[in-house]
Image 1 (cartoon, rainbow, N blue to C red):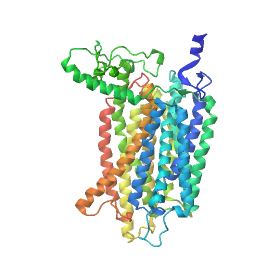
Image 2: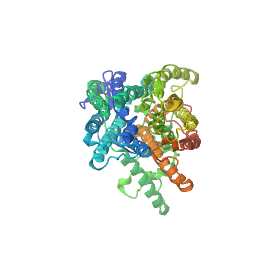
Image 3: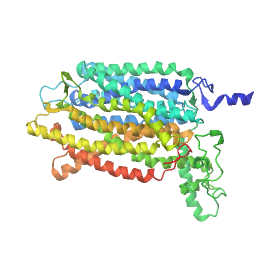
Image 4: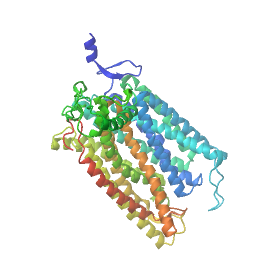
Length: 578
């Protein structure tokens, strides 16, 4: 009777009431569909304000364009970096189910604060009486602004760190059908991100520009509140992985043991647990973790790769608490191997940061009319969003099945090739952005509008759609590829944390953008006395030079990526060729 119950339940998973989950009753695409709907609502609430935030800070809070751009990149970076916290808590202490509910409540509180501030004039700085006499927000009003923003960032981080792994863990990875459904989930997750973004950068941005920011924040507040009952409705269908302890503790323990034991070994002849190294550990055999977890019992020998970490298996460690198992060491090796891939994606996300900062400010100086319809500058991301919404289903239903037939593998197109495609597209995007900015400034110069930043230039904002198109395509290939790569390659006990690396890469990209702006301004002001990216007039910026610098750095980053990607070996047999 007990064995029959074991066959009908998933070990290591529980339902929302902490009861055993039954095969055929929990998980699957039905459960994941609730996650996809919630993601539409969550991303709508977040991006509705993030995409237009730079204009809110500059026009209503009276920060300079450069300061506003830096604040937005810092806010976005913090939100995505906090996904690591959400992933750690989900893996170690709570479940992805609980973390989502807590995070959604926190984001709701932050948006409510911003809505109240936007509604009440006394909570904002005085209106500008003339150009150059605007007073920046300060004092407790500034505290209220940033308290609201960073509560939103904390909530968004928790959601990004818990919602995608919650959806991905609904599938049975021991079957080909389950793995294919999981791959489809990641593609449609990006599709749903774009659905939320489409509504955000059209309908909500139009409300913010025409009806007032209090209405825009209000829509976001109502949307994130609505996502909570939608998520709860799916509770009877979810299967949730039980937390297994902090992955950070395991990694630090292995690293500390390896370092301490390597020093101790210089004065000792003790062997590493009396074992010789081997390349036959389960994570590198043809029978990977994705094939059958019941067969994934590690051999009692560590692998030869990253052999320094094998010192953690010293039979007489420096301290009893530093005693490590082969499984722990091999799991840390897996994480170390994926870190170079993670580092290679940061530069791409630095390029994506331009979508919500300088590109929006460029559009604000151009002719944004389509016939009689005036398009808000913050609605520019509608171009990559629409392209992603078209390309994602084509990729999932046409490109991938065709690639599987040609390559005769379950994956069809490997994760690393998909990420590499995105990196190449980001290089092209930055080159296009530099050329478009050069054209924009030439038009301003020809019509003697260089000193008139608030007068629209006689050039259509559709020129900017080119760089948005390439960056949007890069985002589709890279984000979905990263999420699936980190989730499938990481050990089971670290999957939420590993998937959060996708968002951490975005965060570091935004931070890197801020750092690059500061470095460029510092260097150019020292040698040319005029910073490239400073002042209230965007026409006086040397933005095209900054974009060319980004293009060169992206090219160097791609070479760095190729070096590591060519040497990476997938864990399971479903990923045969790199």
